[in-house]
Amino acid sequence: SGRVCAKHPEQSVTMSARQPEIKGGSMDYDPKAVLLTGAAGFIASNTAIRLVKEHPDVLFVVLDKLDYCANLKNLEPIMRYKNFEFVKGDILSADLVNFIITKFDIDTIYHFAAQTHVDNSFGNSLTFTENNVLGTHTLLECWRANQTQIKRFIHVSTDEVYGENKESEASEKENAENEFCETKSMLLPTNPYAASKAAAEVMVRSYMHSFNLPAIITRGNNVYGPRQYPEKLIPKFIFRLERGKALCVHGKGTPRRSYLYVEDAAEAYETVLFKGQIGQIYNVGTKAEISVLEVTKALIKAFGLRHEEEKWIEFVPDRHFNDQRYFISTAKLEALGWKPRVTFEEGLKRTIDWYRKNSDHWKEEEVVGALVAHPRRVG
Image 1 (cartoon, rainbow, N blue to C red):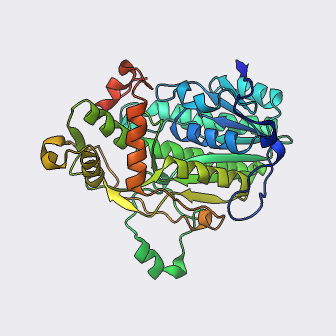
Image 2 (cartoon, one colour):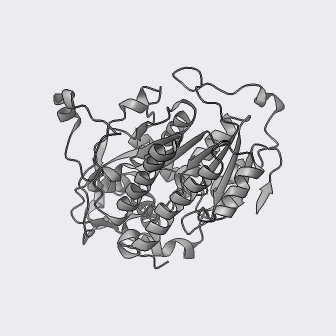
């Protein structure tokens, strides 16, 4: 059920006089009420915090079933804002989604909700199909039932749908005549998680063709920062170091990833909401790549343990398959006026500081299973 939230005591009446402009020009899209799915999770909660605070004239309604990796504490900074509502529930419930759309006069769906951890997808892949594919399909049908009211559907996907990519920025420039095109690129996922996200995307694109769904798709890099459940690399290793445990590196730690600080990601999703164009696919990320082993060593150094680095690294068996790298072009998003601003070094410092100051954000029993080398959830 929904909960009406009181006005934040620090929010002045004059805040609603105007909405701040996003870099790159005036806003092209003017939503009045946005449904954010899965926004008690990591990326979406940080996005929700930014949107609620920066756009007081827009109502933001969060729908989240509060699965294991979600946390209502993630939304505490905006709980009392007058333009925020929270509803606990599942996107698989079409009746609930349709009720929310009607009750809050929703005109935009911003779909973040998903199961996202690759390791878990090797052990319980059916859950990923159910949540990521059927959940998305349910939302699409809810759009069909309310298509005269809902003007935009933004689907948040992942760069992992492209599959392993051995191209580099240099080779991309050398092959300018074959410029990377998100809307025409083949989807070649290599694990059950990525496959479920690719399937969800295909469903979205089918509705765009068959029913003129006014959709935008985003595909994001790895994101890190405050409020991330510690099953992912950086928060897991922070938790392990805080507990005096060695860092379990898969294989030889050679896979390279681009890590985007979550505040930059939130700003990117804000840009897509207000300035993104229907029918487009936007990659969200950074070109600065770093290997898993380099991330590991950076964390050990940040904890002041560089002098005994080898003691804190434990190499463990690799995943069934581990993509070596993903390279994406963010030129289309940058053309809207967005660019990442936080360096990896600065973002890592902010992240460590946040986890140290918020050590009680999760109960110990809620995270202990996530801190092992290869977490597996059975349900």
